[in-house]
Length: 74
Image (cartoon, rainbow, N blue to C red):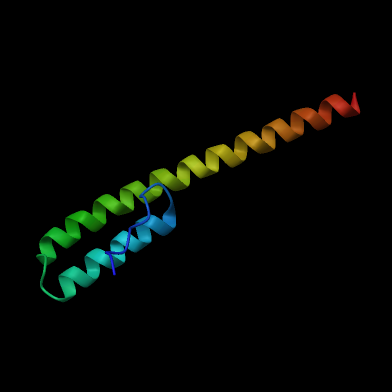
């Protein structure tokens, strides 16, 4: 059986899985707790960027839908 593939860090599920993987490594003393803190901080930053990108994309879709409705109503 092969090693489980990790989800990419381009979505929140992948970021969550990576955080859990790192937590488990620290729990079993495979990585230092200080390093864990730094890596989790970085992953939190990435997760905020992912959320911001998703929000912008959703806002753009809403603006496009509104513009189409305005054209139809005119």
